Length: 232
Image (cartoon, rainbow, N blue to C red; front, top):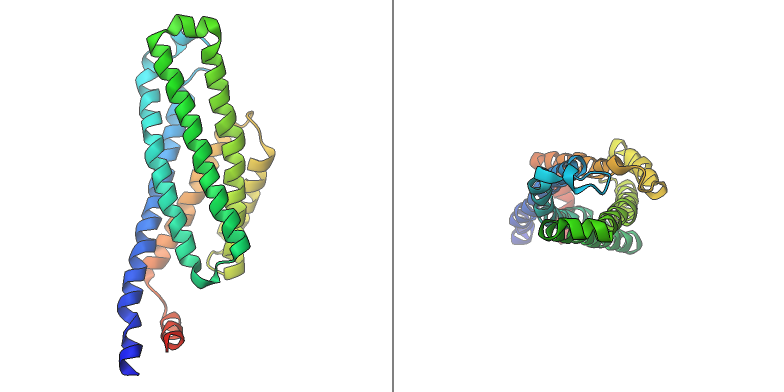
């Protein structure tokens, strides 16, 4: 009996390492995505004139190169939410949560791929690309994927995360309620709100910092005792 009581302690310490690392990944995702979106928004002209892009091409390429790392960090961040839910994870909301997160990444990467291909082709044959309308098409389709479809999936991700956080009491209401409000804006918005997408990494940043602080505090005495009793 004594050995069985002592066994969960190292398991709890090992378990605490993953959420801490994942919370840092959420912070990294927020920083990388925010940087990438800001650089892209201020560098890509709203018109089809290539002369307005000019020397900003290197900035756009930097923004596009940051996107895959932001996506990897977000995928790692998804793990912390599921790990924090543990056995309390609801299959319905967990499915919507995981599916919307993966679809957001797919749309995010697709928009980056289209934008990157357009920039590469623009450098190779700028005048031909603009005269043929391909540059405008690539720019618009990348914006549509990111501002419409990716943002919609981000909204669903926030709704499912906030709902699971409320149902399982793992997240405070000052995080979940703004999550619902922002998610509604994402679902109702369209391409006219280009800068609205920055709200998503900001919300993930706040959520990640909260989880990181909670894990640095360590499990409470009551939680540890309950985990020991359940293991008997």
